[in-house]
Length: 198
Image 1 (cartoon, helix red, strand yellow):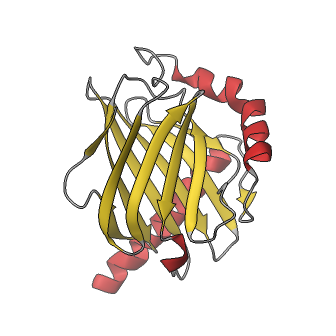
Image 2: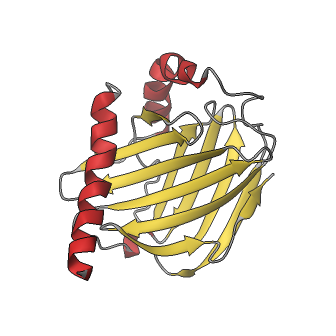
């Protein structure tokens, strides 16, 4: 029974982002790291049409100058640093070279603002197919925004990326990062509860 649940979880984890990406008309990218400049350029070209789907969200876009970090207990997710700058949410995670998936892994960042509104930033690498996915899912509207690009880091041990934060609203956020490998949650940062982006 345990193997069946894992197989179902892995299948759903693979199919859900691919189905959403196909349904939203976005494209997946290769797993080769993009430079910060080319990643930002490709994001800027599509942000206006993608971010206009936030229509019913109240409040101001996520404030610039916010930062937060946490320490984990797993070498695959030893720490996480977040910051906001110029309309982007920066994410930096060491330990990326310690991850050994059979099919895929995903960094799932859950953010909740001061009003209780939540978003999930999903950063997934489908190593079995060579595809990647960076998306922001609005838990209130069930809208998923996909963004091209992958890691900005030249250091294989560090995952670093910036995703547009204009879909998120708030002056501060509580957050937690979860590392999922082949459909199984294997590590969290912080290990218990949440920490703040302020």
